[in-house]
Image 1 (spheres, rainbow, N blue to C red):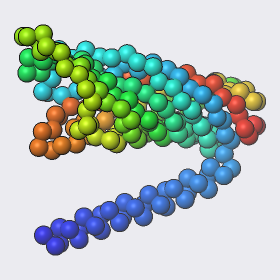
Image 2: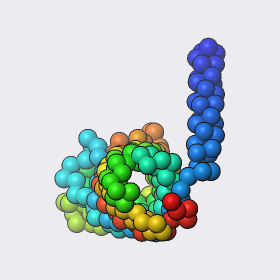
Image 3: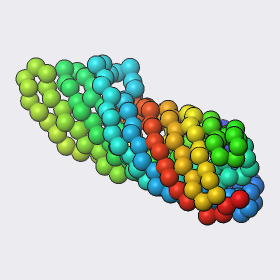
Amino acid sequence: MKGLKFNIVRSKSNVFVIAVITFLVFLSHICTAQVAIGPKAGLAVTTLEGVQLSNVESKTTASGGLFVNFQLSGWVNIQPEFLISEKGASYSRNNTRTNVRLHYFEVPVLLKLRIPIDKTFYPHLLAGPNFAFNTQANYVATDTQSGTVYQGGMSSIRRSDIGALLGAGLDVQSKRLFATIDGRYGYSFNYLNNNEATQLRVRNTGWIFSIGLGFRLIAD
């Protein structure tokens, strides 16, 4: 058991060291990068994925926030975002129809691989982690047999979540302006419920379509 704990601690230390080195290399590139910043808004079609659910209906919601694009080269960009979003779905379980609404503050950090076209149009692929922090969670549940309605908060919802994003889009930039549009698929690594004894094995998934318009702070 001691050997197992030692290996776990050593593995975590190695991950930390690699993360620090990666951050320092990234920071050195950021200092000389061209930067664009601006608002971003979009629509999300989200759902809850899990074998315990049936008759799941997706939820269409709005999201918005701020993006910061770092152009490290003509081909490679890093784009962190700071977004307010809503997720959830409606589903059936144990003779109950439940509508779940989950509000998040999200920080995706995207790697964008771009193809330069005339230094104006940049189609790209994107991928990266998504860090989400739950700010509010509530539900409305209806007993399908009696018609009784229950509603309230969801204190057992995990307060933070980590997922992955994968998608594609198009950047359009001039000397001072920077526009970006993309579609991405998001998948959460964690189950929603943080109570292992009563854990509902479902997770957030969904599509996000968004557009942003910003200003280039350091132009060509």
